[in-house]
Amino acid sequence: MLYDEFVQGTGCKLNDHNYQVYKRLELMYMADDTITKEEIYEYGKKLVDNSKSEAELEVERQVKELIDGFKEQIKYYQGLIETKEFYLSAESDPYWTGRYKSDIKYFKQQIKYYRARIREQKLILG
Image 1 (cartoon, rainbow, N blue to C red):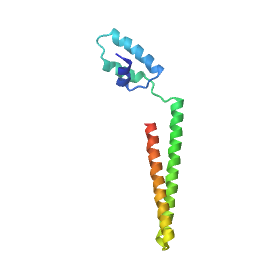
Image 2 (cartoon, rainbow, N blue to C red):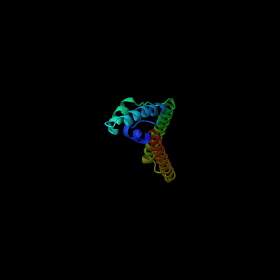
Image 3 (spheres, rainbow, N blue to C red):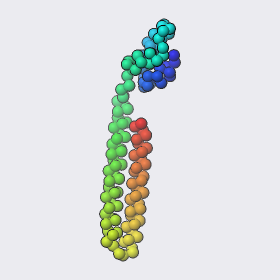
Image 4 (cartoon, helix red, strand yellow):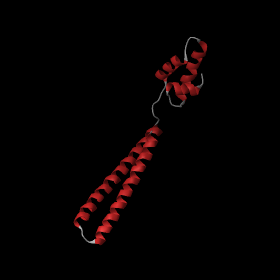
């Protein structure tokens, strides 16, 4: 049994503790012909450590903060759009009508940009 097979069969992370578990279970597997790989995987699932490291937790925290910041920006631009649409409905001057429409278009582009950034960051979280 290869380590890659063990990782795939148990769904464990690649770390030193899990490698040591693999080595012990591999010896057991090699010594006893009646044990199947599936049984080894079941034993392994009970013994492996899939907890997140401090670095992983820190990255996750930073990504969540970034996403929260992007969501705040989206709320801000949505508020600006509502304000401009209100003034647009009351304005009859062509200059201001054009100006408000271009502002709204820009704000919508910004919202689209921040939503794309949120999707990117969620990919990092997995």
